[in-house]
Image 1 (cartoon, rainbow, N blue to C red):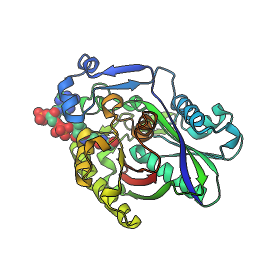
Image 2 (cartoon, rainbow, N blue to C red):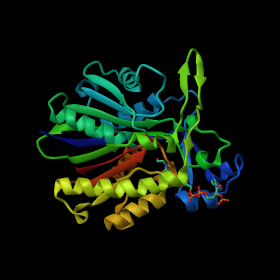
Image 3 (cartoon, rainbow, N blue to C red):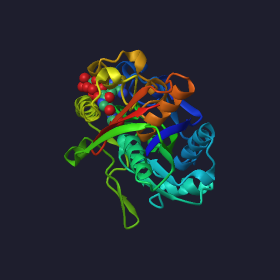
Image 4 (cartoon, rainbow, N blue to C red):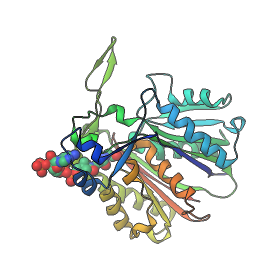
Length: 318
Ligand code: UT7
């Protein structure tokens, strides 16, 4: 038994914040942001619009493409770093909003790596016979963790959601996955706030050592792809599409160069979405799927790195 993606969906909040808008609130320029990151604009969730609301819209679109009904879904995993509330999980809230009444639901917390971790977990559930039809979502209202006076972070991130339906299949969809974590690097990217005794302790805003993250990302992304391909006995030339975590175009270009892939084989949404953390890969995948770019039978490589630090890659047959 294998698992295969049979539908994708995504959702972006209505409000668009351009680099020119940011010039008015913080000491930055469009040229700096665009040349350093490739980002031109990002979407920002409306007041009261929660991660589960974004996830709901993306999920409904993925279910529609897959031709799957609420009665069919027996596993929901939501990858998010910005849950609606402390508990219950955003996955349980999404389950309720969708009207799914069977199976199980839980969140996956692996920051920007969340979607590849969630997809790998859903694949293991299906191959182990514990689920048949999984809804796997990456959803973030990440701008709520931004200090809009900190130009080193506030220009880089955005909100959105992407979802896939992963279903049991007799032919291979997910071909393999390789995931890593190394908590020693957790201070490079974090929001260290804690809720205790009715108060927030620590900082409820994101901190990032951008240069350190950049160097770490370029190194580990190349390594993990090598590991995964060696496991699967495949070559760089077997990859038809790269759908990377959309954090910075320069990190993506460095990875593509390492894999010998021309940039027209790389799905790019960072310019319009910014870094949407766990939502970025399923958002990019849905964008490419709906544009008809990825063809049946092609091999698609997903890769991501994020706070923790965590990193990983998944290779799949479309
Ligand atoms: O999802 C995973 C997590 N995130 C990432 O993958 C992000 C990884 N890092 C990056 O993408 C890049 O490091 C950044 C885009 C964050 C920064 O690019 P950089 O080329 O590493 O710039 P830098 O941090 O070295 O800053 C260069 C200069 C500094 O000024 P000085 O010291 O050279 O005078 C900064 O103060 O740019 C300044 N700067 C800015 N200037 C205008 C920093 N942020 C801004 C800004 N606008 N928004």
